[in-house]
Image (cartoon, rainbow, N blue to C red; front, side, top):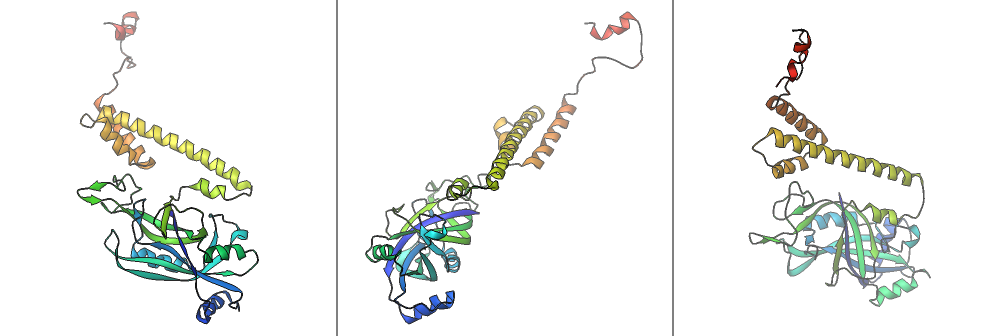
Length: 315
């Protein structure tokens, strides 16, 4: 699973009509009035290729439209209850006539309808949105994989895909689809967009960015010690696996005359511990058959005496 952060644009106020308020109240079990609520829209993400050479397909945007309903708006992705300011109550996939994506689809983008309570704390933010000062928002979601446009494999799986985003292969540029969203976390007001194109600004981080998550959690707890222990164990496991790969390559060079070191290393790098153990044992047996150890001393109860005892050392 990979975590995606995609910045977009707050598009300003919408008229607090009865239909919109009815949706808000029905979703939350409230009876808010137009005087109590500020409604606005946000452009969350689209199907255009961004400067990280990645994109959502229309199918992925349709799934995100479902996932982002009910998600909270915060500041700078700070996951704190006190920073929750707004919430998306419905979404819409908007067509962009005359626009096509690099992947060949008609252009479209995901639009979110959000509401915010008119409290004293929110007065400044509402004024900034209405005045066009607070324009950029950033959404965070999880996707199953990042699909290479050249080979169709996950572009982060170096064992299956060797292509590089942005490079051209036989006339076709490599881009990656952020495929099959599995969850939407939040959307956040941000200060600076990551991309110059208004309304479609984006940054990408893989699910492995644990430090970013930990930095947002200021509480201490026993889980931190457990995490340190897990990291130590993981490092020990990595060292063991590296050593096993090196030993497998060494035995393979001795046992297989037709395979070079680069080929053997490429094979070993793609295998995990069980397969490596079996391959190492196979090479060890083959090497033993190929180069049997000579018997240096005899213990067969043969001749005795000084000459017999020294016979094994006579040149």
